[in-house]
Image 1 (tube, rainbow, N blue to C red):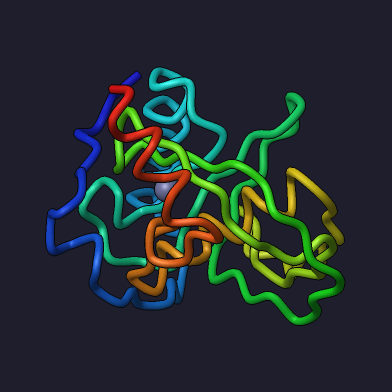
Image 2: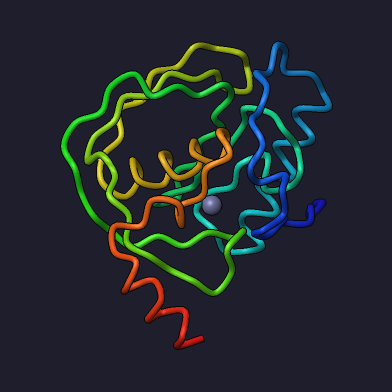
Length: 157
Ligand code: ZN
């Protein structure tokens, strides 16, 4: 098992765009294993490649003991809205309320380069949207539903 260093805000790499993965090479497989180890070690529900300094369209999400490896993920449908709390391993010790779609449909490739479609709702949809934002250089603190709540929690640290 190999843990990678999680980059934290305001590390500029968190603000960069990412490139698609053409082929799942052994190097990518090791990267995915390391990301899973790092996510679990930090007790996160997701981790995106830029958070460990790799500018590729790759994220891992684990919700209710279901692990998803998302390669080149794209949301093709969004439905509804829900405001809920989020935190981020790259913004340690903080939480904030963010509006996300209640239901999403996602296309991505898995580790076998198979084209997958996933319908996700509620917390899983939120976790996936959060990780996909990382692939575009966006952090949840950019889209807080309530700035006051965020600052109140910050003062409690
Ligand atoms: Zn995050």
